[in-house]
Length: 526
Ligand code: PLP
Image (tube, rainbow, N blue to C red; front, side, top):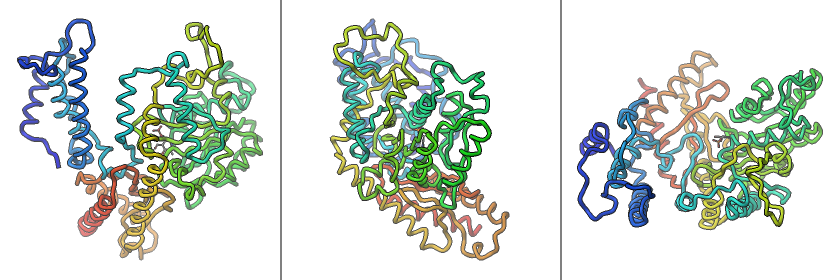
């Protein structure tokens, strides 16, 4: 495993104290020349040499990522002092910058690319995705209008539709690519406001007698915080979010939802939308979408489905049962930057009602009008809050072609099997317990020695188990070999193991299990 070496420490000393004062290297290597002078960009020869060197750095990193501790042994605040406090006044040679990159950047990163990264939900920047990002950067497209990037605009339409077909959704769904599920959900809820006839885009929500009782959005108590944040951002306020109770499997209770809507209507509140989650963040539970869709239809409410993590599983026709009813939604979010091996950022927002996204966000100042249009075109900036946009379709186009749907399915299937295997190990050990079902690739569990389990339920025992499990997880993470995260389920500290990294193999999951058991034995015995 890589640790701080003395040459690394020497380089740090130079970076901190002498940022640009070293004598320049005399060489015909363009990278060793002293930065960019004059008014131009990097000259093509230097750029080419630098790009080749960067490609080597990237390939070396991906080849050896397992040599790093997944999370470095550093403390908050330890990195900033490694950088000069003042900006560089003059140009620095690329060779020097890349050497500093090697010394300072990867050693201080959390290695999401590491196969032992089993925390949160994985995000892998796959090879094809990285190639796409490189080309995207060089091309410098801004598909805010068709005219500002015809290829960016039309290729986005192509990959959105490819993904829709892959996920098995009907052709009534159109959509766009955004930066995150948080943004996608916010856009969907803004459209829901328009669908409810509030005309919030024109009139706002403040001081309206028709909304004096407040508005309501519903989601389960286990839904992601991005829904609450969307309510905050859209001026609905956190108070507008009705958090519906869940059952013992952490799934939204439809009867409680129907009752909440009816109580809110009686109290003069205006219900707008329901958010159902397929794959909640803590336990990956699945809300009963078909039943919720029925309620949304009856009540005339917008239904948004948050499948940011688990949506990728719908690529597998044999595994579509949990998605039943999502085809009835008004909008759906699936994040390719979670389980489809796409480098951050890429979120897919699908909707049957593009015209309502447009009603929520379209504004055409004169300087954005296209005067010479022959045919109607799509200007994606009319469907979202930002004007400038990234050309995210390119990396998805490369990725989808490189792996093919078949390749993506095989990888997701493999992850589902790894998680199922880990869950079996937990279930077979009397000193450990699983705290939630495992419908996808995330296992929620804790250490609970059999001797303690036999005692009657006692809050003090649970609190000491919380501390013990937190210590076990911290000990495992200190190993640097794997990285786990936690949540709280039914009030209990819960360790999560989420498989989603492209490089994770059975040996990594087995190593996590061995480390957990040895740390539990060490701490449980103490
Ligand atoms: N929805 C769910 C179910 C999630 O698990 C997450 C993140 O983990 C999000 C939304 C937010 O995703 P993003 O980081 O793309 O905003």
